[in-house]
Image (cartoon, rainbow, N blue to C red; front, top):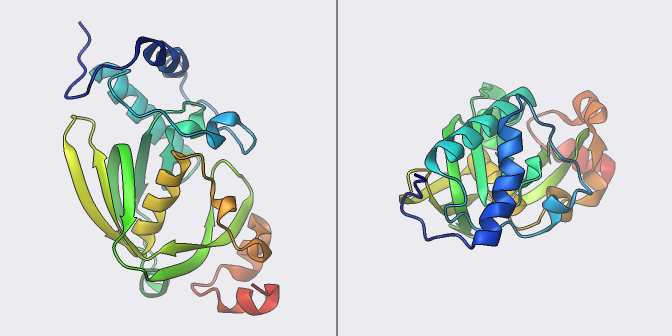
Length: 217
């Protein structure tokens, strides 16, 4: 018997569509992350409403977490595995005292978010380099809200609301954007785009001030 937690019943065609995408992935150890140009990255993801049973959902979340760790990354959305479903996993254990103050980067404990929506907690913005596992090999400066409130459903079916600031807020916005067909290059300051090698060679300091001067953004 399939359990759907506290979710409304999914449309049968939607259920079959999502299951046909997810179940084969669960038979693999490390599916590839799809890259920019894949249609799943450019369409609004379907709301999660019970297309998977509890065990399948837990297995898919565990798989997404493994792929995120292996990449390595600090977040992964289901469309990045080719599945247009409103599900993202987030986790960041990076610690560097030089980055904590300027980038406000603090550890983020793992969580999975279904049907997430964020709203700015204030109009204050922050600009820093970020990259994307689905646009491999590049970094760019993206203006993001410094603080956001996230509403989502957890895997047990409970409604949640959490507030995030600094780098954690950046991760939340980046991953939630994926579920709306938005990739960070849609918001990037284009003159800041650079390869990972150039970023590490020239612009990996905590501040973006030197990059702003030299690249003219």
